[in-house]
Image (cartoon, rainbow, N blue to C red; front, side, top):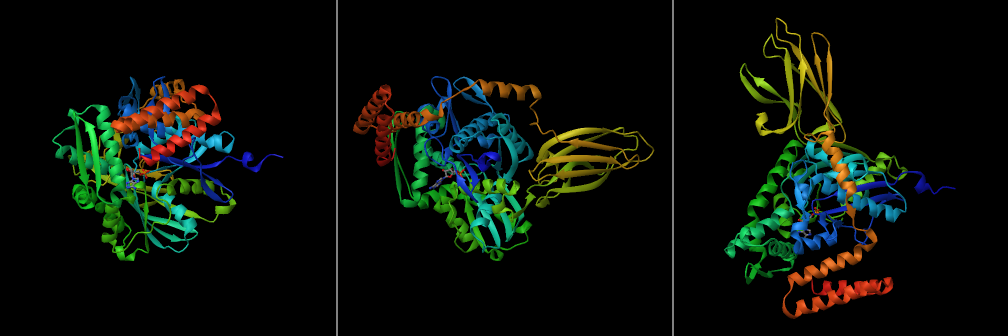
Length: 563
Ligand code: AMP
């Protein structure tokens, strides 16, 4: 008889993060994290091109940010939806191609763990991701050979995971600060119903900005600019500051850095960090206030506060939230893994898995969607909302408009998203033309927007006089990317050599030793050089048991040196 798990597709959830990515599966009535080749749940969202031109993803790639910055890239999710290209050792990659490599690596881990091929997953995206960013995420999955059964907003995924663990919450604010994005979601649990009331955020604010602010402050103290420092030294400084940031909760931190021709020292305590981060902490407040206002709630109306995302580990952030709400946030679940677990739970919900059938989730469209119209006779470029932000989805809304001039023979429907009164200040999504038969009077038309559960939009225009209907499904392929460039992405990615998964633990240790060598000096550096030589020799022997033993010893020794 066929195994029940093989008979149906695996119920997978992917958290594609700016800093780290995870994959989880719904199995035996619960969400479980799938470990990568190194046994870790978190795979750094970092891609590097190895010297033999093969692609490395994850921890080994992250170690190479310091040693090979010109062949390595991190935090590319921040540019999803833009035309930015990243150069790795002479090859060019778009943010969605790099994301595809990360998704591909997670897919391989899932296949190795489950023992069969996987084809489909729920993928989480920041709630505040635009239409374009969502479409590019779908394209990244397509490039990696995965069908997306649903895109779920990250805080909503976290809410699902909390809903399964905690039955006692009612009105909850989810504060989700990841590496590159910030989302605030206000929702209500009336189990089995989880109802999202409002979602707001900032797509350009995350833990990476707090590290960047430290870099700026430290360079200023040393009277240096990034242009005065070579890529490798700058990479090692960012790495050291990232570590310093993560340890700040333990007390004053000291850093020594050998670069730009000198050995330099820098110290930072929590009070000084608060000063450096003041503008960033202030930016966290506006989305919180807006989410509460849209949900028509005051801070005191909330029953609980939930922190999600690695950057909520920062004491400065926790303090700011505690002061704003006059209470401590709830943090019983791991903020790093909860989104992936919630995404797997959503996959189970979608597949109507028995164990979860009861949970019903309603989500919202986090931004206003509308079209460009004329205000009065001659003022063009006004933004006319059709679906207002925080409308429950799926939704379909219609608005009636009039042509400006009686003899008009063409109408351009230009679609935008945003919260500003003029379209020039909002985000352009798409445009199309509708032809009219000129008439003596101005004509009426109904414009209908239908926004689906994945956060994707369709537009219908009906001309009232003739009843003629024009359906425009917004191009599901990324705008700006024609069929040819999509095909070329497919071809380029499938031509890439991917580093073999089973060789990753050794490759990762080598990359870690190289980084440790770069970061250390004197006796410590000599010690690391001897480890590097010894491990290379053991690898040459090709004895897998001996290699594994040596690897574990060296990883432990590096942990002790905090390198
Ligand atoms: P995520 O995208 O949720 O994985 O969050 C990653 C961000 O969390 C990065 O900017 C990390 O620097 C930050 N982060 C992770 N752990 C800590 C910590 N202990 N203290 C401060 N920031 C952290």
